[in-house]
Image 1 (tube, one colour):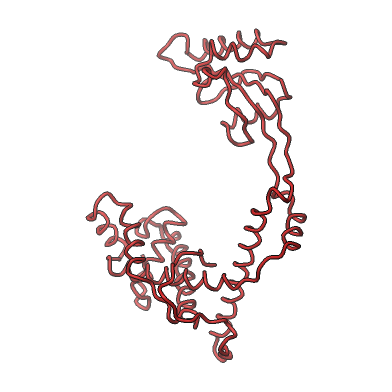
Image 2 (tube, rainbow, N blue to C red; image 1 turned 90 degrees about the vertical axis):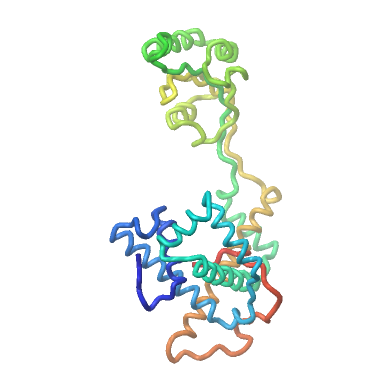
Length: 314
């Protein structure tokens, strides 16, 4: 764990967060290389937080005790009891008071970033349509296939479900389906050992990646109306019937307008945040001119701001 005496105790929260985000472990469980990587990430996020909280836009921000209580309760609620929560805090060089201060900083950071993002210019209809035309591939519905299956499971506890016998049973069913795919549902209901047998083997309409990899590859190699050969998976042996192919579809602008707006506005907000942070960093350099009042559209002191409305721009 980083114990840099020049860093305040709240830094340890950033170190903990970096370790968990990168390695799903506490800092004390990291090897030296992982610890160094987590430390560099914590340095960046803590320094960025410091920079934002020292900006004129942060003056007058108030994070209410109610907000802090809720944030602290959300973290404590991940533990089965308060003692385990306190022990885990101690293992990471924290206690409830330090965590509360770290959360106050985090909430204030998010509140400032949300307010900065709100200054982003609005998006016009022409911009929305231009983005849609330039990124049509992002607004398509992928090819999907309506599929049924017959499954014979493998289970050595039952003679008829030992691997060789299960395979032979399914091969006999496959022979009965040659040139007679329309009988698939009847055979699935009678012989399949999947719950889908109750629905004549229907698995539904799926896109690539929704089935086991072996089944996915077999299904998307079939022509419409074709029955697969025997396909093995960790469940057993399968026959698949590609009942219908639904081609990829380019969605019209009027169907995705709200989605396009959400993407464009999110990009505008992030760009606004990045530009503001770049300006902060420039003015933070030795000898840089101090920002004149109004050049950063500073925030007026207000009532407590609902924090965490935006995710920052680290």
